[in-house]
Length: 323
Image (cartoon, rainbow, N blue to C red; front, side):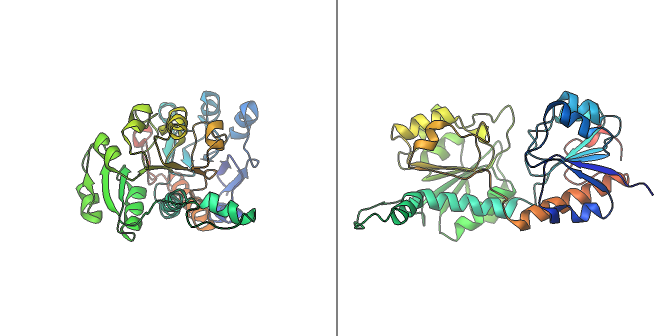
């Protein structure tokens, strides 16, 4: 029996593809993925693809259209996949909202703690053998018992809220609508965006990137935040206006920022790279073997469902074709 062909746009942890290889022929792109015509040619004839680290344009969708049944985003985000274009070509698009939850929430808390307690500067002090250690060196911000505002009330926001409960933090959240299930699980108060920004010691972002959420945090929003407050972003880089963030941090109008995502990845705004009150990680929210394997296996199961004529889980456009 001829195996279905799956193209993976960028090299992944080998163990993440073990389940997929048990049933499909798998071709994997290079470490940083292909671009342009090279990508288009690699996609031709694929029955399914796992898309990560590469933005798919109209030419790529045209190459996929005759054969491809499903595009699986390896992570939770799918702004690199033109869902409407895929729908017009009868291709399902899925993503992985569950597999990334725990590790991304862990990193959000790590960034929050790291910025608050100035761990970057503390580490450099010890590495550079700076002495003596004064009592007032690297004075930080207490996390326990402080007010945490969450933008969003989805899976990752819920996981962060549960971790924050262990620190006795006072929880609030905002979104387009109240989420009574979230409130029951966390005790968080629903606030409008302005109230949340003005009252929180820490603000953590957990919203998707859409045309409506681009620059969700801009200059006017940062102006509402308290001067000691810390902004944490493990969602998508472009939900924050980085230029406005740099200006707020440089002007002392914001206490600090912990960032795992950036507007123009893999490059952070030059101003952010110069600021001591910014802690940055290179989009490492799911950088554990556990998450990477879970994501690969989740993609495999969605591809298997598609090949068997079933609607895959977490499908973003079920109307694209009939199950």
